[in-house]
Image (cartoon, rainbow, N blue to C red; front, side):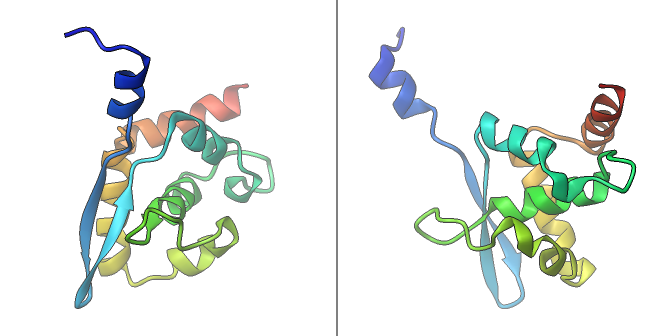
Length: 119
């Protein structure tokens, strides 16, 4: 079946998954294409040479992907350091989920870094 505009918009909803976190779960949500691009362009993920820091890229991605039950963001971009300060055992599953939901692997994060420094 070929979708019309209404069908395309209905099918274009972002995916989410619940990630175990302590005694509960955290909702990690896929970002839109424009939201991922905003992460790539953010000054918060750049080092003193204006190069993309891959660790901070993933940190900001995680910060933006964590949502409440209604799909609203829980953390602001400026909370990146707090999110990255989570214990490794708590942060890593979120980072893996955020990358997977947004179609990224570690290699793609590294390539994103290279793309930004080549421009």
